Image (cartoon, rainbow, N blue to C red; front, side, top):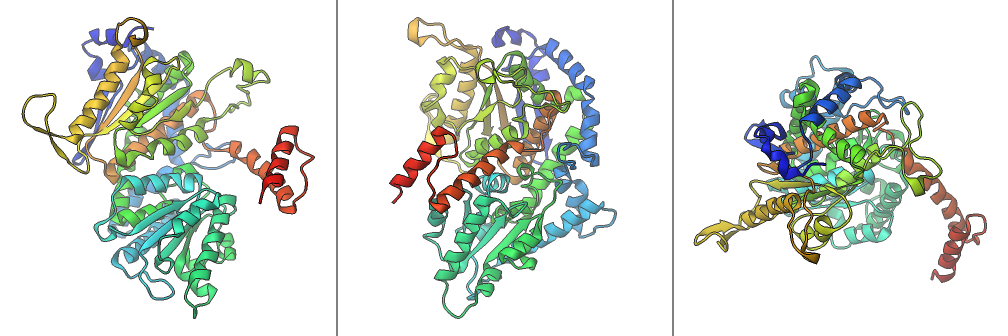
Length: 540
């Protein structure tokens, strides 16, 4: 492996590996130059992608072929933000739309009405008070995406001061904490579950219903209260209605959209109520522009394909098994958690399309025959510099880093210069300097004796965006989605099922049956039996 810094003798390296996407008054720059990629890699990986007909596979997804082959489903999250859908929402005309697009527009129009009613104050609770608080109840893809959007994008001006909260964990302490200091008469709940059978979501929804009803002023029936304070998003409308939510308050989602790719749909309702529907539409617009790039750009210039190529090189050629995401942006603090699901639930697979198993009985000792998704982790900078960056600079774990940094922050704080002579600068200048210094230090290292030695030659990718807007965030998320698609095709796995989450759920129900019946544990494995027995003995 060559030293990264030696690769810069190629005067064209920056032109080849620094990519810029321009859109309106916004831009995203992605710097891949501090990786070990060289010209031979471009040629080899382009041939690899051509060999698997990656351009044809991209077209299969966009055209609606059932590329989720284990569940015999289409994968059409790109339809949620198609140019046709966005144009229809802007003009009000649905002429020429495909069936799926008409369905999507119909639900987006309902979503727009809800957002507008909430924003203008016409949304009322059963007691007549104006709704000012929104609590999203969901888990996984029904939570992480919307939660990220709400954290990253500022509320519309009319929504400043209103509360937007999320509840996901079946740990009831979370929902009680979310409910304890707000007026429930002024709160609406958005329950999101594709199947409306998700245990954690239904448990929390039940708590929300009982708490709301028990705290409500007299004179209102349970049905009136639930009708005015509950919305749902589900592909199983009948189950949501059976739960007690009015049919007119249930928005649709579809089998052809996986949970972790669903924030573009009505699953993003809570976040759309916060940012306003116009900003939500800009989110779709940003993603749609990346879709067009991915679909229409040749392999050599296709940014998601280049990104996938670089990561696959580290994973499959060099044996890297983890990637650290470090946003130098407070408002992107949830981005690593969002990517954890999007990447690891998509590509954390060990059986290929041909049925080949990539792990065997000696997997714990010898590892896989081929690595697929790496472990995704990370937190915001500069906090992270004072925790695990010691390991990243001098430790024995090999990690690919991805830094994200805005050029223009949402808030500017002026300060006196400390390093560059007299004058003024901003706190953001300090933040950017730290981000750039980390990628430079990882690459260069430092020759020194003993414990002060830094090996350097550690790779990183830096993503720099002009502003954190809903449009830019839509572009960023879509870039990662398509990179994940390409990696799945390289590894010949299905990026769109998630059977790995099911076994634990089944076993949890078996254990819960024992707990509910207060029966002694004697039929599980010895470890589980002793843990359950100890729980039952000490439970007050």
